[in-house]
Length: 391
Image (cartoon, rainbow, N blue to C red; front, side, top):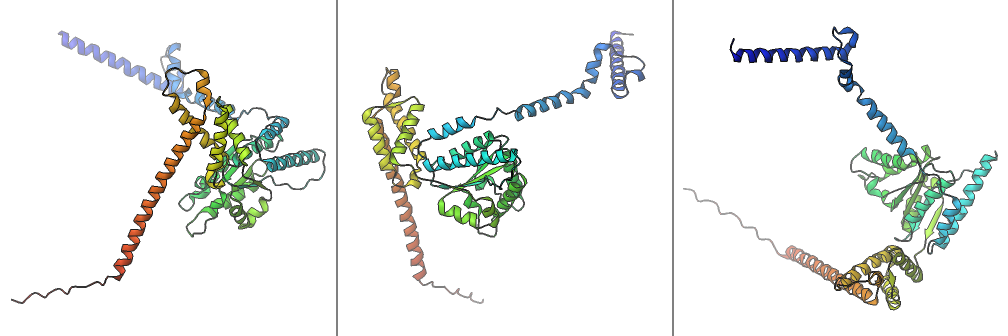
């Protein structure tokens, strides 16, 4: 036998051994060690049985993760939440209504604990007012207050609008709305511009979202609070358009626009939190900036408009400081009247550009309208095709 035959024989022996080991291990996995002739070494058992035990630690890890997710911090003290509410700028009527609600819920629960009769109390609310008046902020605080009082189990806030609830095809809206409700259980579901759900077209599925929401408010009335928000008149029409909405939403909170002094105080608060400071003339210039920019509470956006102005001031401060090589800590913190003026100049340029664009669009639309009207007055001359001469 030559070397070539010897190598082939050796390879066949190795292959045979591997096959026998694999068959024996397979038998051990299927029927246990006692049914196979030769028991594998003890060190081989974990490797052979590994596929059967992989799922167990994964399930344990998933269960552990779910338990960790369910663990919540303890409820906050109601006194601390009241203090936080009191420190908010403006919102005097809202603070009064929230404190009234806290007292009502507290006494309601005490009567229940003492076996006394209680009147059904709806905790769902309607927030009305212009943009930037603090509706979302108060909704978030209400969720924490309800948890502190033992009304809600989690006290979180889920914020959506029409696009988060309504789908474009039949049957999808109920599923989409139910998923949002499931996420909000134990907390507050805050629906901004809720009046948009009340669509009028035949192919609108907003009513399906409303029906799903009303059912969930009944099924989960012990651990779900719904707050709907929007403009005054539109929200009233929305609530009164459906008897189910009227019966569940009977608590209205109106959010007034911020005054000029309140908006200036909001700007001061943003400046302080951001570790900035105004020069004396810078603050006066900023207050005047707010007054001039707030030509409409809706377009300016109250506190939202103030935050936008604050961000513009930071941009202009950065542009100014970028020209200097040596900057102190005080330089990095200071906002000046120069920064305010630069922000105002930038606004004026942007407004001028927008007006020019609108004028261009309007001119194009007018031209199209004139050409359309002209084309209607031009008689159309139809040419009669000449018959081909017969050969």
